Length: 304
Image (cartoon, rainbow, N blue to C red; front, side, top):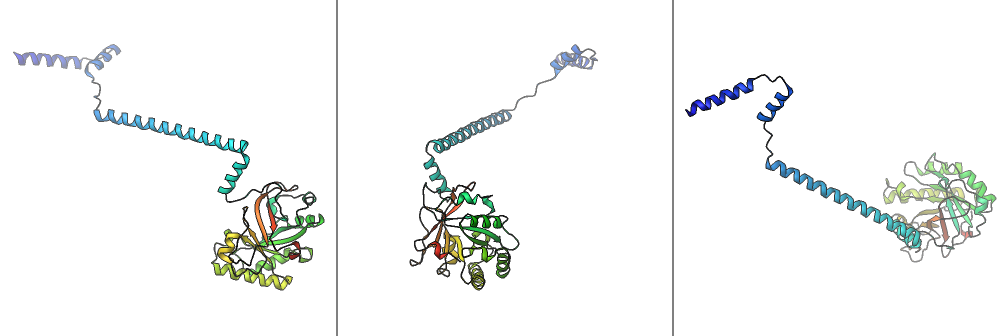
């Protein structure tokens, strides 16, 4: 009896399924009756909840970062406009440079094509400027494009002029010195020439190679000019790579600070101190290097 009922019911279902579905309504009815919705597994739901939590945390983190950034900009802007001295003091300390104070003493400047076109007549109205060193050459076949113009106009304005060569490791010293003298006419110079030694240009050489190369350039200069050239480099570079071999030469040391360069040899002091790269001189657009004589140096010591 039970089997007969089961069989009849099964046949009824089969007949229903096999009935051709001709209308959209019949197809919808069939779909709703015999199609089961997929069961949501527990671990899938938990995974989705975890993803949502992660997204919410990222949104909060992004919001906090944006808020922090805006607050930092606000603090910097406030310091810049309300406390400019404090702002620049902190900035230059971090940047390892120095912003000169108003009416701070200086005796000269050094320039290159990076300073753009210079109005030397206006520069000469600043009576504190007694001299200028102008970049002439770098390595071999790299002249400064404004050297001739700067030299002629600075001398016309009554400023004492000297030329400098930026040393590189790519060419022999004899080649570099000959190139320097081919560009610079010593009869149009007022000051002893200067040899510029930059740390970033010396990375290929050892301490011994640097010193021997400088000594070779000095020898060539002495034969040509009759005097030793001025040696320019940073205070740190001199202490680490050149001292004490060159202590008896005229030293032009860069140290961007209120404190003057200090050498290990107590009897030797800097002769010229480049104390800032952020000087402002009428006639020069933007920043310019400012230089100050050492305690035992005057303009007479630099004259060629």
